[in-house]
Image 1 (cartoon, rainbow, N blue to C red):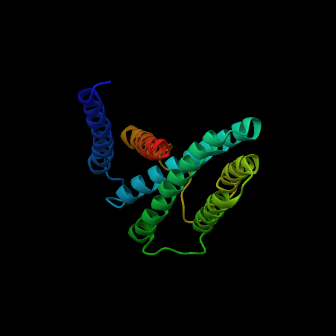
Image 2 (cartoon, helix red, strand yellow; image 1 turned 135 degrees about the horizontal axis):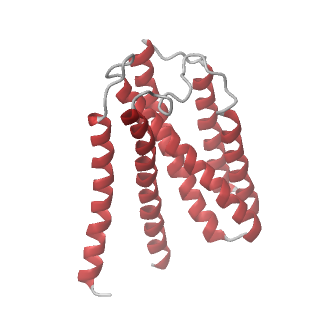
Length: 210
């Protein structure tokens, strides 16, 4: 493969990321305001998108963890670790934005609100698994921890009571446009996360070849 072809592919690779980010931000700022929340819904748009994308990534790491349990492949473990770290970053970013969303929507951010406590517990559990998997020498045990983490996220979020947080506000909105925004933004955030997984995966692979 010629250097010109490689350079062109690299440019397209970065342009894809820029396009995803522009699409995400454009959707956030061009989406309609909500009747009750008004412009504060833009914080909610971002919070929900990043949180959902992070959760989907953690579910994916759980599925990959099952494959690690079956195969014991170290390369698969390395990719799964990347997926989990990027998913953690997305979920954590969603949590940070939720603070702004809370102040904009409720005038504060109550730490004892059930969904907020659930978010903190997911962040803590994910961090524990990620740190443990940097030290544990047993590949299949690492895979099991990813499965355990995904199961925990899958269990705690639906089973946490709603107090201040609404239910599926996006999916039940009378506005078709708002429903589409709540559908498309998490998909775009997930694709941005996938870009970073691939980017860091290639960088790590190149270093191992040196």
